[in-house]
Length: 536
Ligand SMILES: [Zn+2]
Image (cartoon, rainbow, N blue to C red; front, side):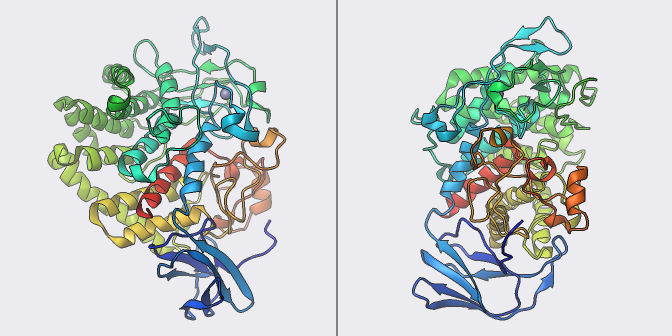
């Protein structure tokens, strides 16, 4: 796969002045850091390498004290590897991760003025049909294509938009406002403009009784064709508890934020959210979503709606101050939640974001004091994992499954939140190491964001990238990364026997290692906003 195995693993987008520089060394020998004039500015002494369980590599993680802006090389024996230190080094890739979602927009043309060579005509503009009630025919415009496919899924979409909104709420200076998207310059930060493209679609996914349809997809995945050529009927699949509660939570969050930017939209979002909540209250008995027979698009199955209801109750309490929501949130929290989970299946961590940084003392003894203590304890695990990993990665060796980038970046989010609460530098640095992982400091020596890094992902499982006739994939999309489970036989055949952190194929069919997804971009967007903010 790679022509050359470097003994240095670095953040391929560089580093910033003022923050420590982490690098992983696959050598026990002395390493010199030289500046552009060839002068040694720092020496990493000889040191012991230890076996990293996840990758099987013998490595050591080194920390170089902050360096001034400039060009540098790492040098050990014959091997040299260049890296840069520059202000705002991570701004461009952070921008690209948000713009990556613009490229996922459905229902509108991607204009050359914004999309460059990746422009295409409008897609999926025909009315959708109800799966259960075929007399239901209506337009459901907008939304982002979810991943490598062209489906649009309510829960994953709500989670993605929420990550972006919280990124902006917590790190406004780390969020760019010049993404060159159609809304740019409208007085609203572009990260929110992009999120609103999904929120507008979410509002269309509500059934007349307040519940939300689980997804809008065809019965089967399209072949590798451009979206405008994918003309088969899209269906509004049955409603689900999880989709309804996740949409309720996200729209309530949106109503709080857009109150200043666009009050009419904010009010509409809150009304929709309350109708969703009322439906949930009227349907307390959880039943998991199942794909109807003959439907073969993403399942996004979830065996509990407790975490989604918790997140929704927290947001509704923050938005309205009504005690009933707080009581409900407390009740759900006391049943036990994983407060460091931020993915589509378990959204408890987003509820924790609301409690810890919006409600704060208003949350009271249970939703603030006790939850904070719980959160600090749970987020400590992420830091422990970084210490157990030779690469500083917040994921135990036996947990590299499909989309391993999600738990890794969830670890970053948890450590960022911990750092905000405690100011512990090792938490900040733990989060930074996950950012470095995503951009190249890993066992594959690969930057997982398309269009970035010196060793790049070139063949993501992503229909437009695979069918547009352009060599370079659509930029700004993050690949799921190594997966030790070998979900597909052809992946297993090629990777069997490799350690989990190396089970990755930069090949289009390998959805199990190389697919992209909006809800993998969004924790990277959150982490990017943080690292930008602390490096300004
Ligand atoms: Zn589309």
